[in-house]
Each structure stands twice: as structure tokens, then as C-alpha cells.
Amino acid sequence: MSDPVMLITGASRGIGAATARAAAADGYRLALLARSAESLSPLVDELGADTALALPCDITSWPDLSAAVQRVEDRFGRLDAAFANAGMSVPTSFLGNGGAGPEQWREMILTNVYGAAITARAALPALVRTQGHLLLTGSNAGRGIRPGNLYSATKWAVTALAQNIRAECVGTGVRVTLIQPGMVETDMTAATRDVPKLRPEDIANAVRYALGQPPGVDVNELTIRPTGQHPER
Ligand SMILES: NC(=O)c1ccc[n+]([C@@H]2O[C@H](COP(=O)([O-])OP(=O)(O)OC[C@H]3O[C@@H](n4cnc5c(N)ncnc54)[C@H](OP(=O)(O)O)[C@@H]3O)[C@@H](O)[C@H]2O)c1
Image 1 (cartoon, rainbow, N blue to C red):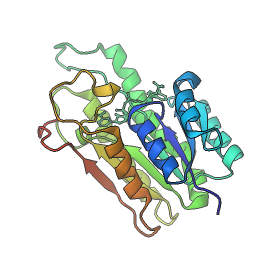
Image 2: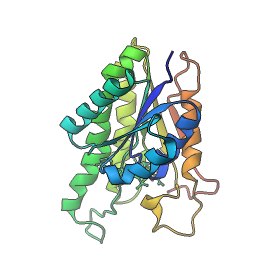
Image 3: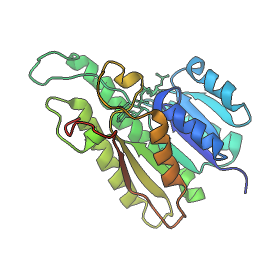
């Protein structure tokens, strides 16, 4: 069999880029998605053009995303894993006590919920053909209550997405894993200081663990939090 192929959204930095490096070390060929070619080109240069393909794509656009998956199959001939990882966060308050204005809420919902859902929709027909693996980045915030926090609600939606997709995939051989990080040191959390954080590589290792199981083992959910993280974070 030729080397397996993995598509990663949000691959230009943070958790997605760390996962791309780990997957390349494990022998995957990679389709790397983010909104601009410029943001992806350093990682493609690092991994090599034979291993990594940059696919500039806004994951909130169905035409862009479905065309990107088609390009992966055209270039590599197969798709074995897709990591729906891209996401964003803005602070919110339903009482209006600061945070981003409601017009900025739309992009977060579209990216975190619609983007993850249509990534699954675009990738799953190809994953069914290979009996492949869909992974989604939810969050520890998608399991608990955070006062006024719409980001948390979008990640609750990702938790439900993973469960509902897995239920529909029964009988296809496709595995579905929800990765739920606690606080990770990336651009997204740069403003949050003096709290314990994981490294992006720690989440890449969780992805690696799920991918590395035998075909009959479907790791449904992995929650990875830094030691000592506050229970409400
Ligand atoms: N960091 C944490 O503590 C933490 C904890 C739990 C869960 N998470 C989740 O982990 C995932 C990755 O976050 P991160 O911490 O690695 O953040 P990050 O460093 O800010 O990276 C976010 C990635 O998503 C991409 N992206 C954002 N919007 C996009 C869009 N519309 N279309 C395509 N790509 C888009 C960005 O690429 P471009 O800007 O180059 O397009 C970038 O590659 C997110 O789903 C986040 O919610 C993070």
C-alpha cells in the first residue's frame, strides 16, 4: 500500500501544524488547509513538497472545501484520515459585559460548527472508500459550563457532531475520534497568562494515539488537559 494520506484543517500553526509534523514523521502524506498559501508555505518547505500539499481554503466555504478534498484525491489517489481542527475564539457576554460584539459571533459559529460539519461532509465519502478515520478538535470547553461563553457552546456542538457522525458511520468501517484539549499554548491562548498550558505537540500525540490503534479499535474521545488546570477552564 502507498503511504497513507491525511488532510488537516487549521494546519498553518498551533495544534494543526504540530499534528502535521507528527503525522509526517509517522509516514503520512499531508494535505494542509488554512486560508492563505503564504501561511502554509513554511510548513510545506519544512516537510517537503513530495510529502505536503498546501491547499488554501476557507473552511466556511463548501465549494472551496469540496474542491480541496477533490484535489487531495487527484494528487495522492486516496484519503485515509481527515482532522477537522481549524477553529477560532472570541470572548463573549450575553449580558453585554464586554467581549466581542454579536456581529463577530457569526464567524466563530460558522468556523467552529459549520466548518467542522462540512469538513466531515466533504471528507467522508473518500474516507468510506479507505475505511479511514475522521478526527475533530472539540475542546474541554465543549464538556463544561463557562459563564457567557459562546465558544464553549460551539464546542458542545462539535461534541455532538462527533457522536452523530459516528452513529451514521456504523457499518462503514470509518472511525470517528473527538480530541478535547484543555489549555494549549498557541496563538489562540496567547493573551491568557500564568496558567498551566500544554504544548501543541501534546495534542499531536493524542491524535497519533488514536490513529495508531488497530482498525477494530475506535477511540471515541480523548480529553487532554495540562496538569493543574482549573476545573472551570
Ligand atoms: N489552544 C487551545 O487552548 C485550545 C483548546 C481547546 C481547543 N482548541 C481548538 O484547537 C483548534 C486549533 O486551535 P489552535 O489553538 O491551534 O489555534 P491557532 O494557533 O489560532 O490556529 C488556528 C488554525 O485554524 C485556521 N483557521 C481559522 N479559521 C479558518 C477558516 N475559516 N478556514 C481555514 N482555516 C482556518 C488558522 O489558519 P489561518 O489563520 O492561517 O487561515 C490556523 O491554522 C481549534 O479548533 C481550537 O478551537 C484550542
